[in-house]
Image (cartoon, rainbow, N blue to C red; front, side, top):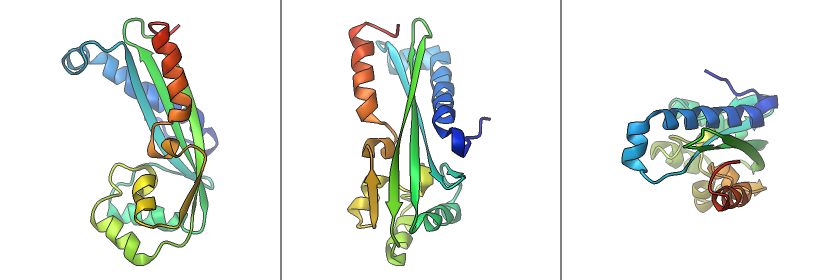
Length: 170
């Protein structure tokens, strides 16, 4: 399994997105059943990079607590890699984006509520940006917030428009 390296997070996230996309393309029966008219597979992978440490999805609640507490009063880079695969030809294109998220000191009652309701599950770094902002966490995002959420629309929308207007990947 590929491990994301802090200094190569953009390339490694693209590779992980590609691996996901290839798995989907390889399951022709499921693809035909779930998306019979699909022309392109879109896959993505997101990590948080805090210093030299890569934070993926937490294993359990304690791991989520550790990730979030380590982010307090620090800034992390959030990287999302995206891969588009043409189903018919297997051609691919990959890209990545990053944004920064600055954390203040998170009040313990907010952190505990977040952990207890399982809001950390499936989220790189143990949080979903939109949810924690709505909850009043002291966080600030610089860059495209959709990159932090896991699908960088600022770079993806024009890429999809080009691909779809040409009828597939070049």
